[in-house]
Length: 373
Image 1 (cartoon, rainbow, N blue to C red):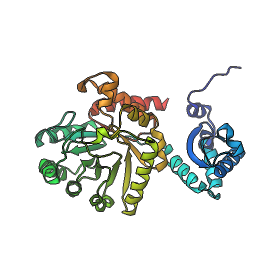
Image 2 (cartoon, rainbow, N blue to C red):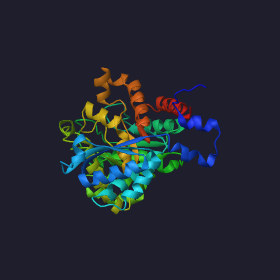
Image 3 (cartoon, rainbow, N blue to C red):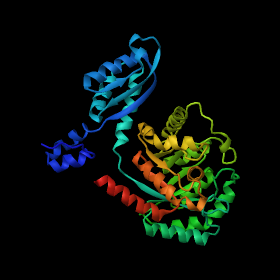
């Protein structure tokens, strides 16, 4: 007899040759998921603990929780997807806010197995972007065609820089820069790629949607209501930020980073869904009102935001925090960008916003090769 530790249980199960109809059932038993639940009411804690144990799952609690000395506790829920699905059913019928816990777990599990990965290439038509930009329409259009040929899933086009300390520009200036791009894209009608407009101006977004764009990448954090009438006609990227590009670097102090982002997304999602938004993608806003440590925390715990049941976009490409960590100049951050995005994929990212599309296509091939082992 020979016993070894198995790194990829799914692959080993497939190689054993079980009945395929039961494979997904066995898969659900090979994975343990963990959820930190903060400020859980004490009665709710005891109910979850009892139900979790009855299903073979676990709720880890502080040692004084058994005495109910406090009104609220932080806890850690551990279980397989199958156990958690059964727990959700049990909690749906319970008081003390446990339906909300059940709904959150349900949304997470719904999006957890999502394997769709898309690459969003960046085309900037500005003179002041932090990375390579195109100051004339001709070179921008050439870049768009090149990215289509390379196989971009989405092309994100912007004419207003959102780098730290960038000046805000009005929609009229923005649209003037985009005029020839709009015409070129409307004439292109390429169904293999989605065009996204990177803007904080609703008037610019509206004009883009008239010219074949299908996605709005709103880098303002939905601070103005004039964007809302547009969202029912497009895919919408909701990004977390604070302040404006001019002020955001001074707004990086958070009492609880994840709690603030959760509250931000929950509030904005409710608003967007009331306006019948077609499809919402979440972006935690790497580099937007975040310092280096906060960026790393978000990347490390990205899967936390899966509980919203939405696709997650990450854009860490060539950003300043990578230079701070690697002590590299802007033009030398290509490897750090690709490695950071590889890590983001492992932690649940669905869309990567990138400057170097070719390098990321190669990285994605490598990532998929590892996943298929």
